[in-house]
Length: 213
Image: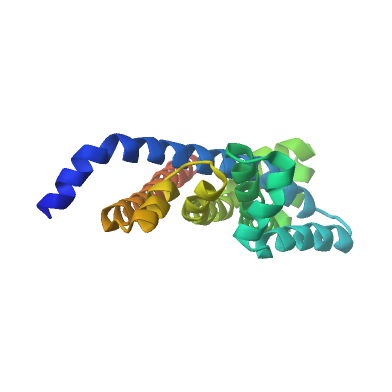
């Protein structure tokens, strides 16, 4: 145990740098996923032809089923190596859970409430912001929390294309057979995922409290 603490004290700058890179890659990917999937989920939850929903979910499903290493390999000729292909691949993986939960959230809103709001003169924009989005928010946040945990875990593979992150510690440990590096990289990734889920949970509770009050 003392040897591990000595190792950690010696290498903590590298661990902090890798954790920072890991958070940057994951954060950008999830943010882009939210920007794309939340409006799209809200759009297809409305009165749209069935083929529109089928097409959107079909494309998102295809992205989800591509093996991660294969997707990274396919993106290298398009984006090179480093941050961009890693973020783009994780962005594609983030789409389906957020899209599905956003769609379910908006579809769960009682049609009678919307009809009553329409009768009171609410515009479509007002119904969206004051009724549909607040009621769908728990579903959306659930999708974002699940996606964030997955993306933080998958980001460990980003090091294979030179994007850095905590995967660098894990793969370096495998290369030189150093268990401390493997354990530290894996434990830090788990800690980041749990911390991110905790923070997002706090945000969700704060929003609910604001709505209820």
